[in-house]
Image (cartoon, rainbow, N blue to C red; front, side, top):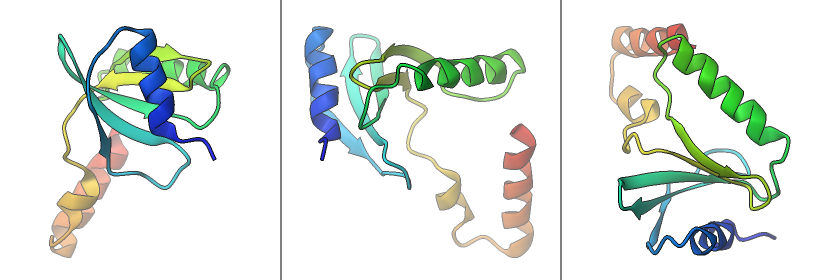
Length: 119
């Protein structure tokens, strides 16, 4: 099994970035998300278990479509097709799942509808 943090460490070394990496809550996929620091501030790395030669371009195309339409989406700063690393704007730790917890049905439905309307 590929250790995702090792792929990110290789990316950081290759790009002469010296920073500790912080795992971010994983999602339900094979990707891993990590936060690391640069001179410009913190960034988030989405790390795939394999190369992303074809997937990277789709990822960037979708991001650009969202940006062109004024939708909130993390900017893509860099990607390494071979190491499977996409470097993204760090938008913080707030996620919809956390905001939904403890809300009444009306507020929960509104948040979900608002989120879907962005898409």
